[in-house]
Length: 351
Image 1 (spheres, rainbow, N blue to C red):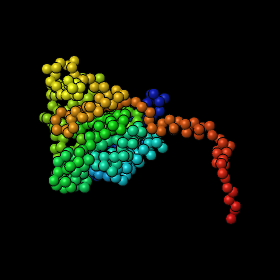
Image 2: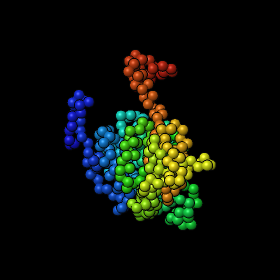
Image 3: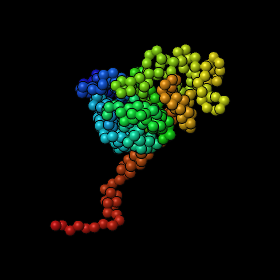
Image 4: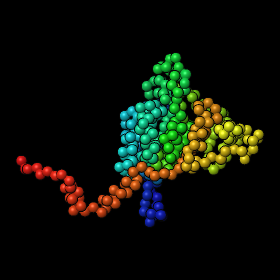
């Protein structure tokens, strides 16, 4: 049993003090040794207790892929769905049970291939879900085929002459679907992952989080410039709302608007801090966030991470839920009987 604390704001009634242990299942965690999923799982299990939502009111839904195992390792309600359908299943749960905290765990293949339509419609509807997309730019569970985020020219078992497909940019895709919260983080950057998860959990509506996740067996080093110590300090462009966008070991570089109107990376000493772009995650128009999503098409150099967009708009089915609750409150037996017997009716004789 969790420890008990007294919440003064709740009239002194006892509330459980949640810990990481409360969200850790008794199942053996089984991913390849060194997989980035381990780091993500540990951070999620550490953040969940902070949210104040008990395990019995938390649901994780996954599809097929290495990320699909996640639901077995968090001690909450969970559904291991079929390929690509996690957002659809989660939508049904979130709409029918608005009292629950619903999370989706998916991979780049699961979410962006067969599950692409389910993902974009959940985002455009602003269903109250927290969608964590583990992007390792490869199909890991099925042993290393190219995925919708693999770079052109990628040589794999399914593309021995190099992939001809143009890859998805998950952040740009989410923004194109008008997602109200869009963010990116990196698996082993525990502090940053936790910060982004807290922001996603606090958001009303759909929260989409892309997590760069290293597959050390089939695509090792894909995110090395923004993941590995010694180089990530120079390449992570950390987006902070209301602050000038600057980065580098000494903050010596930044993002500014170029002469052609597009964004470019500059040396702060050359242009001055006043020339730097100030990040506005709450801007209703997603165009700035979309530009930032395309600042680095691949994580091979300076790459934005953090919250790209966080805006408010109507949450899917919330108004309908209020209307149904009010209708239920007003209904009585007579009204219900009248409704059931309205229109064409038939009398079925007894046998």
